[in-house]
Length: 152
Image (tube, rainbow, N blue to C red; front, side):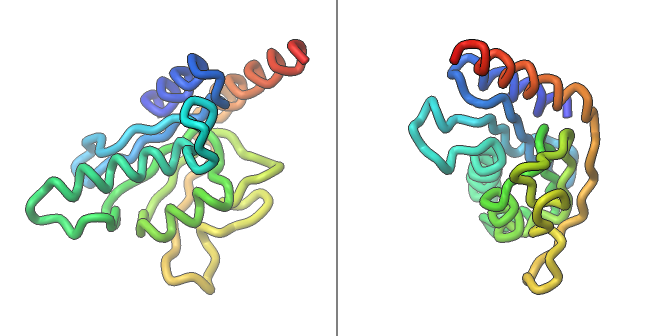
């Protein structure tokens, strides 16, 4: 979660919402890092999780014995509960575990608003570990949005 928080803080330099993500391989090594880059890239799909998943898939493709895009032995660590788009990407990437910090009571799709990651009608289910360094993750977001409200 420390690396994900560092990525979240890096998003502040581009005025992006401070959310960070890390894909960790089965050996504990980092396969992909991501932070929100929507403002920076002008890309509505450039959420931290998607950026990290893309980087991890690229890293696996470069390895000889890999089946490419399937992140089936990996763990995604993210500072905020994934939204529906990111939850869909997690399911499609076959990631078996997600660890997140703060809950997203407005758009979360890992148990708060929706539960896409554990939806039994889908072809893949994800173990979810919530609340890791929750206060720290939530405070980063609260500070960001409080600053934006006072500027408006």
